[in-house]
Image (cartoon, rainbow over all chains, first blue to last red):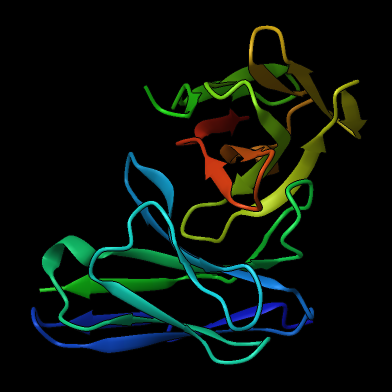
Length: 113
Length: 110
């Protein structure tokens, strides 16, 4: 039961470097999401994809781009990393219905120096 | 004002005791409600959905008060393993986006 798989688990970057966080789900869910979690801020939505082929901004999209590669995969890219993007990133998937919960990957801990 | 607010705690609870805490939400059009549990340095996991009539799952009871715009979670006979952060989650009527509260930390002690 893989569920939602994120890679990498940990990453350290220098300011200005780029990287892509990968996420894949095997539950055939329509919707996928990227969140960041910071101390005292809770989980905040960065981008989401309601269905294959669509992406939309969430609460904190600046500095990020996403790609819904296919129904299973949804990647998050930092083009030019900044220290303010140091955070724990969670990918989630769900059926995209308001009354249905989401399932989370185990997170990527990203530090930007 | 935050859309979803929770007392951050921590709630220090003796093992075997009962603990309850609330979560308030600001949007009266909010449609669905959930409690998630998050262990330290782990991902959030669904604990239970919250239904209008209230619902119970073992030692856990969730209630919804639409008039006052809050949901509650009660844990009976607390176990050491109940120590975690409990996240209140709300969805709006129109879409599938979840809004998370900041979490309430619960520490169950022997």
